[in-house]
Image (cartoon, rainbow, N blue to C red):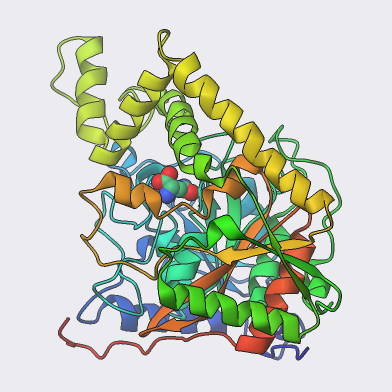
Length: 485
Ligand code: GLN
């Protein structure tokens, strides 16, 4: 396969050997950002921005030397506020930095800013942000997906080549799919979550977004690995991920789970998925039909487990210890009540109520207990297919291309159903990736790959083959200033 001379690895090498000025890519990024954000329909991809990013002098070394990156606003940074898209954390500054961010900086990357997101990661459209929705760079009236919609839009628009997101039930892969970029959710435990604001701790992972498979792999390689500050991070050697992109799929067994191709699947998504499978076959892979029979329990199980964990994790926002405090309360209890009522948005409140209910004494077994049983059988489905010789599973990432702004926001059930293909990987803890497989009437469509625990390398091998056969999509044209929407 051809090495991409515009890829982040190649450009960082140019910075290291002096061919490229260390701040030149940051300057390009700020220029692109200006064109997108100050036009007629601003993307609103960033919540915080450093206009002086990368200006500080100093040695530029490392795998990402001089590469501008965007970071989702639920990762703690010392030099920007960390708000999680929530009013309750407006202006909050973390006293420490997330390990993933520290590792990026140590590798020479320049953090350009913090990206917009659904409040605390709860959503699939980035409409649940206290800072207004992000637009899809491919169409100003479409959502970018969520919850890492700001990161995906910033990469798709060509502002940054790579960005960091987080994925609890699809929040890296689904926006990657909607925006036409690559998004990887690694194996649970692969990347430290120290400094990632917790949503649902048994599901959350930090993930990587990139314009190409190689770029996403380069970022993932930098942030991966054991961190003594996160007891859930695992001490396993990180396989050489860039090399995995070159391996080729000859002999690779690709499983196609029939439950992910229901009769009602959008016909264009189905056609593009079938084309991607033919491309894998043409490149030498063996494609096999398989079954993951408990897939239908994934959405109900996820929408019990994630809110249950969230209701506990979000108890800490009481108006006293972090962020926004309501000033009018005459008792401590009232202070908590008012701060939380004013600080949290509708979806976060809905999740806290759902989660608290599911964990309450009389209902715990019926809801939380059952959901955990469902989770176990879903994980077992994956174990079985991988044990039976499947190397990687291929599915659509989302049942549809990007939907319209406002289309699902008042119908939480429809919004939750957008996650039907992405939540199983989080429940099972396996790595999963979304790669562009084409355009449907001008909107990107993503294909999802899932592999056994710790086999990010296999995901990248298969994704690089799809990319080589089908090409990348985009970038979409920069809207002319003053363009009407
Ligand atoms: N859309 C899912 C939810 O709303 C997943 C979000 C995520 O992965 N952070 O919970």
